[in-house]
Length: 172
Image (cartoon, rainbow, N blue to C red; front, top):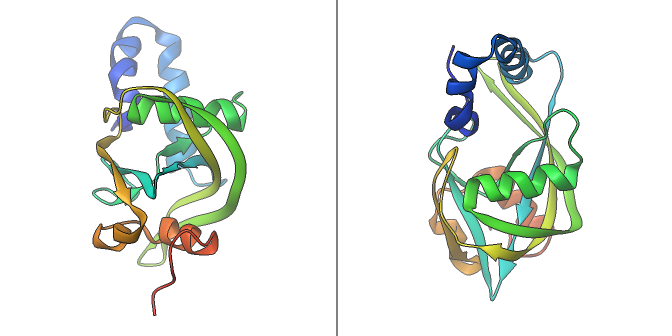
C-alpha cells in the first residue's frame, strides 16, 4: 500500500509499533481511494504585498503543479484547525484563518473513471509566525507576484478561484 506523502513521516514507524494503527491507516487510505464519498479539503489564500504563497505539489492530485497550501480535513477536526495544521505541515508557517473565500468541487477523471473528488473549502489566511520551509507533500513553496502567477504551472482550480475573487484578471 502506498502511503500518502503528508503521513509518511510518522505513520510508517507507527504502523510497525501499533497493530491498531494498521486499521486506522487503512480507513484513512480508503477515504482517499474508495470514492464512496467526496473528501472535504481546506486551502489558504495567503496574500501579502501583491504576492501569494504557492506550494508545488509533491503528490497527486496535481503532482508537480503549483497550488495554494492545504489538504484534507481529518475526522474530528474543525475546518479552522485542519487549515492551520495543513499550512504548518506544508510550509512551516502558523496562520490566522480569515473569511471564507469560496467552495468548489475538484473532480478528476481518467478515461471516464473517477480518480479524485474533493470538496475544496478555501479561506483567506494571514501569517502569524514560523519560517517558510516546504515539508510533507510539497516539494517547494514560495511567494509569487500575483501579476506573474500565469508563468507558473498553477492548478486550474486555483486560477479560477483567484479570478472569481478579482485577485487576478481572467485570461482573454
